[in-house]
Image (cartoon, rainbow, N blue to C red):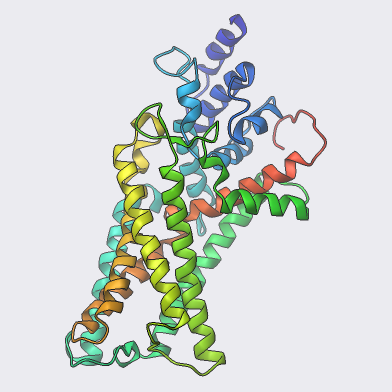
Length: 380
């Protein structure tokens, strides 16, 4: 106990930042080790005796914010040690996104992310409304038999969305490369890649410390956060698959939209859209009710804006499918394209980026587990 008190007093003489607070708390956790059998963060922690900024960045992105350690911790507030790993890790993650954003100047978008995403959405919808009016003279027209390209040509849409998506993908890739180099991962093996992919696709560490789920409002466990994440992720992947199949149809099979309701692109898109209604709606409900001690209050606008945008993309897409043969199709199309464009524009600077950083952290964890077991000093 005396050693722990000494650690606390020494740490308080250092300027307090999320990284230094994480260092302080992890030193205490490393001495206690009550949560060693919980998620991947704590075994990774025990392989170290120092927690440099690069190590803290790695551990923060390995943390899935399940909240189990907070409710298990004997040093959690109101104890004077004030150990709150979920909260400090959330704060460090935000700093990670800002630090590794590319171009670096755009990392500031994370500070007011809810506002930035809302503005991007409003501007994108306004742009497509004006473009439609300029090209077609009206936002309502006679039924066009579901032919979206009668409103905006295929080449116009492909050029606009291709350019924006290409930049966003480049920005995400550049940021991820810098993060990966910063955490000095080691050599990638096939086994490590398989394990990390499995852990990501199954959301293994959203099962909580004992596999019973996350803590949300209190110390009760629930698997609903994990389930809603699954609906969201696999709904998104089904929508991506629908777009990919439609691209193959168009360019390689000379099959052009609109596609029948029983066609593969429509079936995949519909199933994905339903997943992207259920998942974000559930995540928003849980977020609104979640214990404030589990996360960083400054990130709530970012989290909620991203969740709402995913929901609106899906809702507008399904409405467009349902009314594509009516005079409302043009208006619905412009609104849906506005939501999608806002998503593409903000991909590297919204909560969307967290999945890529978390996958990188999971891969480093899998690599590290296969290395010779020894304590690591300083930057690893």
